Length: 379
Image (tube, rainbow, N blue to C red; front, side):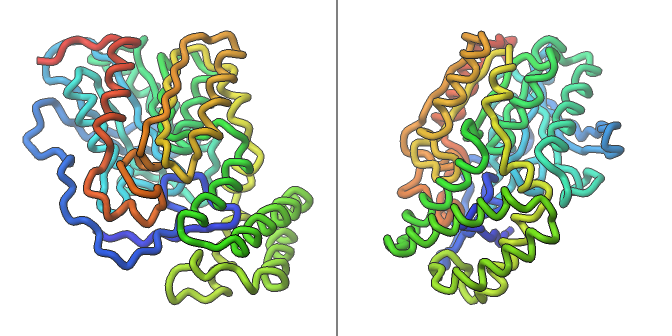
């Protein structure tokens, strides 16, 4: 299934590709060799659970060994933007691959459709990071009702924004036994977003004049956002700003055939959304400092969306400053934001890469889990 994804390149999103421009005329790779085939050598179950605080029902898939036992469990949390339980993007299904790998290693795995997506109810459009955190917490509460699950060994593994969701949830409850941040932000939201736009622009071939314009747009739109709390007023100011100042914005940052008017209208609408206003000011360190359970943070060295050198050190520092020594951070060479081996890390490569999720990254997760939260031997 082909999926059109639009990138916003001044003050872009920290999502797992949903809010990004993937400008590529090349045909996507057809084969996804890591995608598991049925019949699976483990139990698979369609489940639903309630988020009573939001008044919604979330639907997902639970996989676990078909042997009797009390299994540790991992809840997978998607990145920003409405995504299904497999975090499907450009034909890749990374959460399906992760769930299959971890289940074969003896862990139960729950992955679920975001609110308003697939079989989950509710609306995603106005949801903030705080809102979707309650969805993840509801998933943990559901697993605690299952007799096959070891209620003391339920953890969260979140990709991109999902890594921050995991930290927020773990910062306010003792019910979470561990967290894994997969390319999750550690620096302040606006700093992640600003660097992201520059890195993607450079990798996309934008010249220095274009980079300078993008950086200036970032600074000036940031100031407008900070000084304008009223949404209607913000939308008017941002539209006026784009018309007056961004007539030379790099064409390489736009979808082929898209007018500048439509491009900037899309961006302004995103910048005025509740999600963005929340993400703009968020300080991940304030949550990681309060996390007392074991923490694993992984990033690819070629991740242009959530830069490893910008985001891994703050996670390590914050967790340790909070008095938690059980934290491991790893930068995995040559991997992009989706943990694929890549050339540049630019999002326009995602769909052309055959591999869905690096075996190195899968092993890093499973080995850490086995050492930290022991699973019963499968089989």
